[in-house]
Length: 268
Ligand code: SAH
Image (cartoon, rainbow, N blue to C red):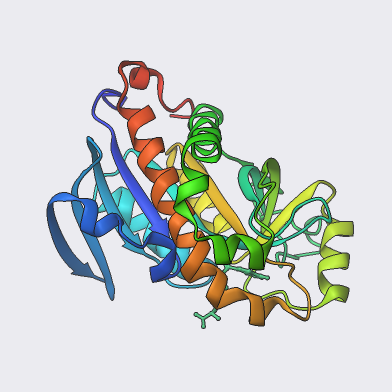
């Protein structure tokens, strides 16, 4: 069993903007290039951490998560990134903490039920309850303490960021940038309770589940996964999601660092 007081947190994002500022904020940072990715180890807000960009998609994310555990000995994983909205109640600028993650493009039927990962008996992989609740607390703190100053007034007006909400629930991942109303409507129907769609989370979830590593997934909603998704996307990621992520990860590390951290992680 791992020594729970010795947390080593792996932080994965797909895109550089989703992790903006974190590597610069690390103390004693050292970067090792492996498998075409930069793994930067150091101390982040009091926590031993390893930051890495997975790049986009499930295979990229699965490989990165596996190496974080097997080569860089992380004990916990946080994925932070952006996603398309999977429900009308989830707005651009809102934040989703995943309770469970499903691979929406997994279909080995009729051999296995649609969306079930073959030979695991599982359709959705649950995120670690304790880590996800710490993450939700970090988001709550961000919304009450930091949001007002973290994002420029221009962006707040442009993206309507006046009533930013935290949602918790199902996130679906697939190797597809969802940018049509027909597709997101179908995905929402296939996955009751769906909040967000993205391209990596469920792959990290499967790896962490199989390796027994507690993990949590944070997604800021960048677009509506419909025909306008690509146009909203880049400006939002740079000017809003990058700011959210920095503040939320700061607060998450502070919460992990508190004395109650011995109880962090319930899966392994
Ligand atoms: N235009 C970008 C590509 C982004 S791909 C570029 O040129 O770099 C989208 C990334 O954001 C993925 O990592 C995915 O996890 C997330 N994402 C955001 N909105 C999404 C959507 N509507 N469908 C699928 N993934 C989405």
